[in-house]
Image 1 (cartoon, rainbow, N blue to C red):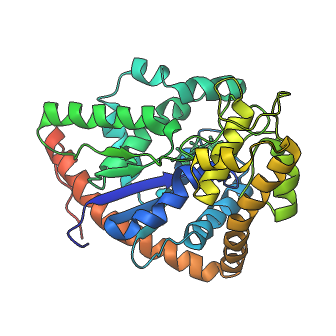
Image 2 (cartoon, rainbow, N blue to C red):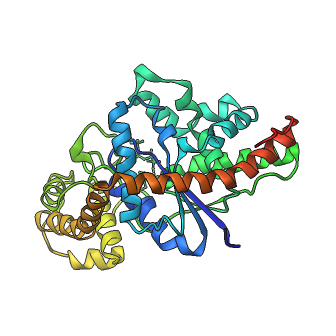
Length: 334
Ligand code: AQP
């Protein structure tokens, strides 16, 4: 790899991605990839913390691989791989578990939210999710992690674990920094704007999926929850309208102030259609390109294979260092 800083980010194939994942993560990857040694992962192991239909998970893994490429990730320039294809991730998780305390995991917001949502399946993996995420990041001596604001708490834990391990065993891991997009770092549900937009939401009208066609996108925006005061401005008490303005400004690259001015005196009906059209203009070419890529499974398999080989090479170096530091006898390879 070239002598640049390392950037790592991962997305779970736990459903079809939403415009939240796109604005909070994917869109920024394309802008950043050439300035860093960029590593992007399909976080398939993470999805198992919630019940998955195995056939759908396999399909979603290809969907996400194709989507990364359709959004501009160049698999020859960046490393693109499936998390389960690089065993070092699970191996480092075990070691990091031995320096992680249950209390710091049980107070994670995502763990609490998901425990409420999946009361019938509060498993150890769900609680351990942030440690697997820390392993993902630390294995590559990552310096920059572009993520949505919802993942900030998990990144803090990653930093704490890296510092704790380094203090106990000597300098081993780089301590990573987060990269948060100014606009769209937290996209909210269209039906409950006080909650974040999530791809696993049971209500399909709550999110815009990267698979939605233009007519569906506009229809969903028309149904978005707003309020009755008919002013199109950002305001703490107008969460629905604030969310729509944020989405509009992110997709059109206009500032919130410019967007507010543009819609001054206009009705909510017209505003919602315009937001939908702005989103569809960006999403539709990506959807078409992704669907084209999905026709060629052999190509996607070859991308994942070569990505895993390149990722494993880098990850192994860190894992060996970790094993040595904690006192394990080095494995003789070959
Ligand atoms: N609503 C959001 N706004 C901005 N960014 C978001 N991200 C997720 N939701 C939003 C960012 O997308 C990246 C990938 O997320 P992930 O799939 O690894 O996990 P997640 O945060 O749990 O995403 P979802 O959509 O909510 O998935 P489910 O429903 O399966 O839990 C991350 O960088 C995240 O910040």
